[in-house]
Each structure stands twice: as structure tokens, then as C-alpha cells.
Image: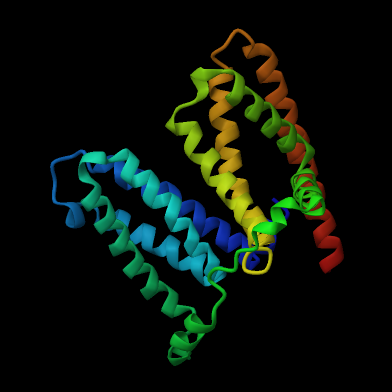
Length: 249
């Protein structure tokens, strides 16, 4: 809540990336309807394109999230993969148009900026540095001890309980893990921003796992844990806003 109140580029990147992934998933579900692909989905294509434009304008390397989106769409619509690819391409065109608005009134600078941008800068060796793992762990703890606890419980539940392993929980899990992986291997061209972007996906993953746990015999304990975690997180969020107001006033 405190981070979102500041509306920094990483927050805009998180909004755009989240919209891109889940709009792509929504579009893929519509491909089972016997309708014309582009015309019927034009609203979703525009929404996805706006998401792409916002995400990429915030951080060029966010374009890498198109890879999991394409995979999700192809998996969800195996009999209409050509249509899924066409929709994603159309959304990219819209996203490019949206991106040009971030250069107004100097649109002529766009080609040079795109050519000089750090789109991909992989450093796989960063995965083997213990300090990086500590930094990522510290990031999630600083984002709130309650969500960190819920994420840990959700990950353990996903591993030990096969019933929870379906697309609705696996998709945000993969998207969040993909962002964390990019945060490791792209510390310069993304880094911290990818960690911020991963948070909404982890929250959706936690929500999906909580919904399954609430239907189990441990529902009362899970409900108590959720209520306590939300209350603590909300309290810390409000305290963070008060502190932010104090330092910026």
C-alpha cells in the first residue's frame, strides 16, 4: 500500500504487467467461442495493448513477460494457437502505439531510445551468489511479514496437496517465479522492479490457495490465519502511509 501510494515507475510496471498476463489469459478463454478472432476480441486486445504500453514504458525489460503470456495462451487454446498468436501480435501493435505517447512531444526520440535500451542483460551467475538470495528474502519480509507467512504456507500447501495444482493457482505461481528469476539474472535491466512486479502475482497465488484451504477440514484455522494476517498487514500499511506523509511533508 505504501509503495503504491508513491506511483513510481515500478508500480506502473506492476500494474501493466499484471494486466498483460491476466488479460492474455482471459482472451485465451474466449477463443473457444465460434466467433471472428480479432473483431470479437478488440476490446480485450486494446486492454492488453494498453497494459503492454504501460509496462514497457515503465521498464523496457518488462517486454520479457510476453513469453509467459504467450505460453499461457497457447496452452489454454491448443486448437486455436494461430488465433492466440495473432491476438498477442495485435496487442503488441497497440502497445507500441501506447508507448509512443510516453515520448510526446519528442516522438522522434523513440527509435533511438528503443535501440539503446537495455532490453535483455542476463547474468546467470547472480543465481549462485548467497547475497542475492538474502536480498530477495529481505525484500519479501520488508513487503510485510504477514504476506511472507501466507506465501510460505501457500507454497508448502501447493507442494504437498495435489488438489491445489491447477491452472488458476499454477499460472500466478509461474508468473511470480518468472519475475523473481529475472530479478536475479537481470540486476541492471530490471532487478528490483521485477520483484515489485512479482507481488501481485504472489497475492493472487495466495488467494487461490486460501480458497482451497477454506474448503478443507482446516477451514477454521485458515480463516483465523487469514483474518489475522490481513489485519496486521492493513495496520502496517496505514502506519507506512502515515510515516510516508511525515517524511514528505
